[in-house]
Image 1 (cartoon, rainbow, N blue to C red):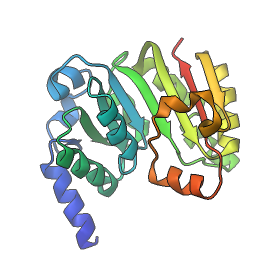
Image 2: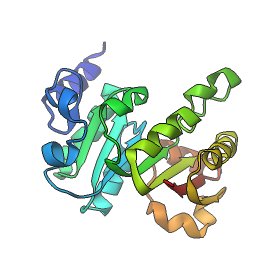
Image 3: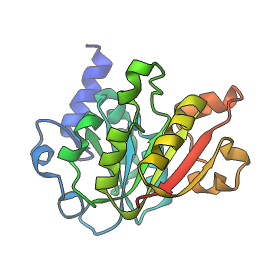
Image 4: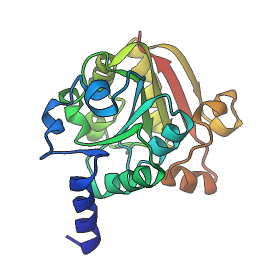
Amino acid sequence: MTRRKQHHFLHNVESAHVIEVGKPQYKTIKGQWRTDYFKNNNPIVLELACGKGEYTIGLAQAFPDKNFIGVDIKGDRIARGSKVAQTLGLMNVGFLRTDINYLREFVAKDEVDEIWITFPDPQPRPKQEKHRLTHPRFLAVYKELLVPGGTLHLKTDNPELFSYSLEKIKECSFKDLHSTTDLYNSELNEIHLGIKTKYEQLFFSKGFTINYLQCKNG
């Protein structure tokens, strides 16, 4: 392990912005995010596979009346987001270090108002399908955790994943689906507030169009 990674992992241990294995809240936070972590009754928004938390941080700054949780398994990435949240004094941001496969262990039924999936690994090979974050097994989890009428968002530069996601979301009975294959030239552009992840900036600078969809939990 590099010295830089050691520094990041030490930060996570000490940071109140990070919930991870070894901390008491890691085992008790399910269903208690508002009461035990954020100390308010504001809506909760998840960003899955949040990486360094650029989107989580950006949304938290734009919506101080909402609570934001970035979820990722990579401790060094989460540390970067946590440090920014700490520097900015953001009290409506938390980071959960866990594998998304175990999301049900940390978030209760109807506890979440929105879910963002931003530029996930497209898992392009057929044998990888079950690992796509819009596979039906994940969509079933999102439907459980989202309140009725809660919103699911997806942004991706990958047209194959986007087409796949549209198909599966329809099959899983989400409603009020809106989508575009060119977000920045769409009327849906206002929704994302111009916030770009590192990967999104890279894709956009190379001329890729950004695919976006939103739908409601039926």
